[in-house]
Length: 473
Image 1: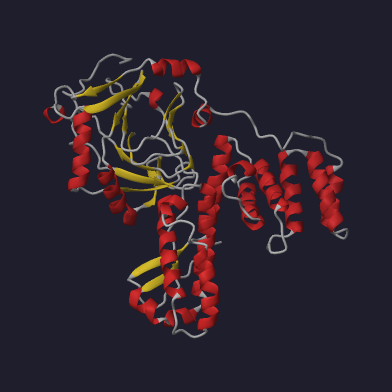
Image 2: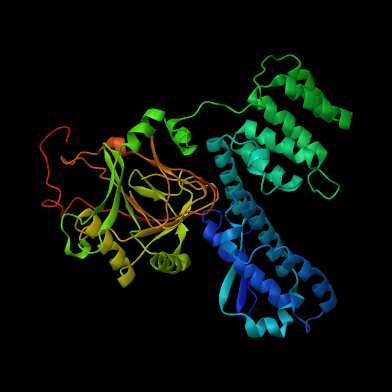
């Protein structure tokens, strides 16, 4: 369980165990990465604190591990690297908290500013690990697949396995414990006994008894006096069941299939026949000399993409004003907002501003709809393995792998493209919900995902999108 007390040093830069959440926003992890690196730089140049030699021998080594990239956002593009960095920053900040001599450093007191540097909680590490498992489930990845670019050590892999075990995802738990066992060294805090016990237990819960018997025997060989392992082995020898724990389940929902890019060829052929054009929004004066680039992504129900609807400058401005206000996104259930693993992101509704008004005007021009009853922009940044559903999306960055918006009812996947906006009506003209527009956001496998959502209400659109009395229209 995470520590809840507040540790405050009465200087300008506070370090605290607090309730801020990091795993649900890769940008928040990136911001913490930059602040931690900055703090370590200051401390590594300290010459006037007590035990200065000890400090100078340790901190440069810590700082070196942050020198791989000057761009924190680049460090977050790989979810496994983001998970490792989150663990590392927690450990490094806890180390600093336990070195009170550092706070005598004059350079620190002179250069630090009045801000709170919070320590990631254990729930952050668990949430990040859960995100990795979600990516494995959607994209059908073994631990060796998801760690090709960035590997995990035995302790890191063991903790991912524990999260999978607690979530009763026993196949993924077993594969992570096996991955950890292969990387076990004398420097690991995880023991071979712990791993063998969890390997046997997870494979038993999965139902592959022959493999469970093997690891129970290995545990007994490691410690012949282990009566619990002996009793477990005797129980297993009298049971029968043997599904293959090493082969991932090939069954998938339409959502998962579309996220992996496995689109039906008939759908692809139909999409290739769709059109794109320069549009003036029905003769809008603002678009006469600068028409909007309009592409039909699907024809029934119609899904439109408007290219280059928002500029790079506007994107960076919206990201910068959103960062200090981001908080965990919630879902609406039975009249109440609540946190859910179904939505792993941080978001904020922006207040009225010239920039927000400018983006809203562009949406109004392109769609021909009134913004009088529309909500302000909801800016979101997704976390490790983050995903969700529902809206009109203004996409604020490209994503390398994953992150598509998919429509399982008719088998279409819309890929994220920086600066574009994807638009559809989720109501029929008769006011009924069009359930065919049910959709979901796929988790990002490589890259970072920022989106800005705009909900446009039907009130005020009576003359722009006339109602219908038809049951089907």
